[in-house]
Amino acid sequence: MASAVAKHHVIIGASAAGLAALEAIRSVDRECRVTVLSKEKGPLYSRVGLTHFLDGTVRPAGMNTHGAEYFERLNARLLDGVAAVRVDPKIRAVTLSTRRTLKYDNLLVASGSSAVIPPIPGVRFRGVHSCITRNDALAIDRALARARHVVVIGAGLIGIQAADAMVKRKKRVAIVEQMPHVMPTMVDPAAARLFEDLLREAGHTVRTGVQAAEIVGKAGRVFGVRLEGGDVLPGQVCILAVGVRPNLEFLDGTRIQRRQGVLVDATQQTSLKHVYAAGDVAETTDLFSGQRVVIAIWPEALNQGRVAGLNMAGQTTTYEGSMAMNTTSVLGLPIASMGRWQATDTAEYRIHSQLDAGKRTYRKLVFKEDALLGALLVGPGVNAEAGILHNLIRTRPAFAVRPDQLVAGSITWGRILRDNRLAGAVGHSQ
Amino acid sequence: MAKTLVIHPERCTACRACELACSMKHHGEFNPSRSRIQVNVFLDDALYIPTACTQCDQAWCAKICPTNAITRDPVTLAYTVSDAKCVGCKMCVLACPFGSIVLFPEKGKAEKCDHCLSVDGNPECVKFCTPKALEYLDEDSEVRLRQAATAKKLRETYREVAA
Image 1 (spheres, chains in turn cyan, green):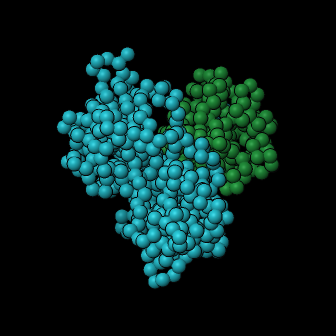
Image 2: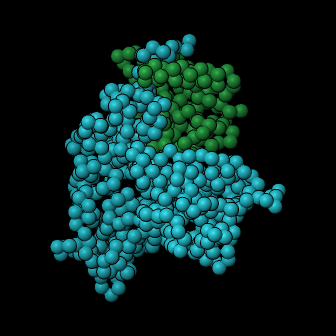
Image 3: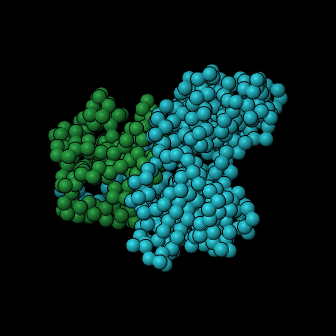
């Protein structure tokens, strides 16, 4: 039974961060009231699945996360298709898109991000789509029936996965990236080169270091993308994947501190008391450098949401900091990068790097003293060791495996067990 | 009752019948590279260590899965991946500290040992393990204690090696 003094937590956003917060709140407080706002109407889904629906791995329902029974079990109220339009921190109230007002004791901003639309002519033509909502993905899926060529503008994680999906759908793909190489925030130039070569050898177009100047069309429908310099790449569908920006319009008019995202402290609380933020909207600190960062990835949204939820429910918990990590496959070639993979050989860091362009394998490990700080992996061995390396980085001081154990070759749990058994401390059990 | 896959490396002869049995059961082919259990063969040390998913109580693969494709079987307590739900994003691969999630390019979906969802019989690998290096035992306190003791020894080793 909820008592008269039971707190009311309002969570804006029903994806990774928002629902991790809900579960965390319920893990310590069964009494309080929780209301979750979900802006997009319809079944809750994960955006991680969008490009995998497009490539045919799952049907649209495969992207779905939770149904009504989940909210029943957690005794929370879901407002489906309802957005926040204004927050008044003085009276602790959120105005909803339904014009109703909700009073809160604690508010979590977990509203995620939206696609950035590049400021070029032609983005309104039919056949031009972002790829960040279920409706975007369904629209792309329908538009593909009449497309032989697809242009993808932006080769970050979403762009490269969308391009890969288009290849699986038997389209001729052209990728345009304004940075010097594909996946600029995920891999270094050497790794990027492996993927650019792979795509070009398969007959696709990769243009880097150049901007799309204009989307060209006829009778309201796209037929290509003109680059700076004049080249026109044909495309009956064009996917915009130039980046995302946090959804924070409803905080306009408050004095909340924000830069790239909303600034939060280690408890995920913003500069406004009783207002927390987590996920793509939150500017946290980097696990290694302590610098301010927005790391808009699913795993950190879960971690931040959990920390925010516990603190909202009154259990003080601190967030250890964000760590970049990404993984995908392009044309069947796996890639993973995590932690401080960008570091170069200096007095501070030691780099172990092995590149085989012929076999398309690359393994770069970054050490600071004896601790593993980052890894960049390309090739069939990625899936076997990415999880082990990621956890070694995250648990640096507590879980030490020596650098020479790691540089010798792909690490497996079996090899760790062997090394330690040979070290003599684990005897035969019989 | 919950059961657990118990591995005795000292009994393993590296015959790899478990890998063949696993790949046949789940992929319809004898192909060690399609197996969810792996025998780590160290010929120089005459040491053979089979490894497979440990079915963690706090399973990070299941917690991180964006579509809740990894769920725990209420009877056997083994975690299994739903093909209809797995989108192939590989976050579970990044999350698993033991490297126990496998993913084959042609299929593009995560797989892991789920004890063949065996309720009363044995998982396929156990059936074919002649030297009994693999056993499927009730998860009784004795097994638990033994696992805990091994874990403790491992931790001590890590500390020594790290020191």
